[in-house]
Length: 86
Image (cartoon, rainbow, N blue to C red; front, side):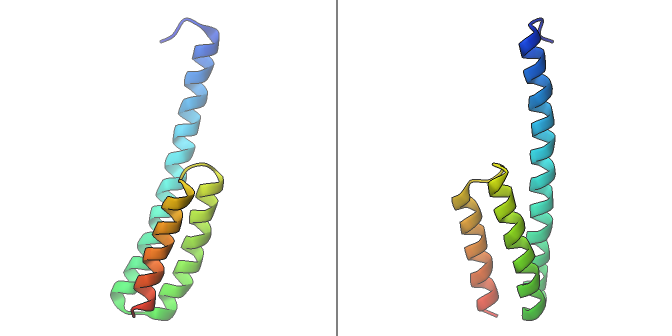
């Protein structure tokens, strides 16, 4: 453990940020999984509804700095392609 006060504070804030990031990533993965499952089931309406929610969550993750904007855009694009192929 660090002896310097400012470093102790950085360690604590980094840990909080790490946990917040982990929570957001896990949530996004869950919504993406829901879209993929509906695509696999061949249910286009359900997939489109799940996609709308997942896209919003991806954009939210970008605004929080968890994901890069291009990463989110690529994920949304791939999911949209799969839905349109149904």
